[in-house]
Length: 193
Image (cartoon, rainbow, N blue to C red; front, top):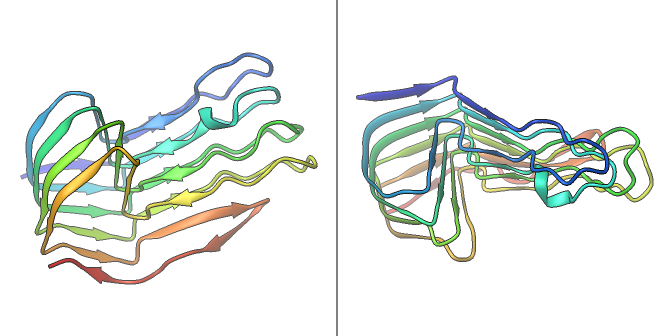
């Protein structure tokens, strides 16, 4: 049994006028190479925490992707009997004076699949109380709050899960920011068979 607990990926704050990447990816695992299997594993309270955006920087460079697992351009053959609890993907806030930078997005609180990532089989696993959170906007006019997608799993358009079997998704949330406030988008239990 493998346990991943209280790990984090931390994006650094951006510097005004300098193009930099403050994204946080994969609180417990970041993979750009094949993983044969993740079995009998627990992922608890892992976090991808993006850095704060700065005035004059590109909005897309302070997202948080994969609170527990981030996989890009690679395959995970099997995730079986894994437990994902309390993992967080937190998009970065906009700096307080920024007009050109908005809050970063929170994407895939437990798992984020990017650029041709494939999970062949996801089975007998549970996803409970994981949260994706968008970063807050600044108070400047034109600064927008960050969005949140995938309270449990987020897959980009070129990524996939081939087979989902006997998984339980409970109380996972995607919370988009609204200035300095959050609103809840989804809080339901779903089962795959």
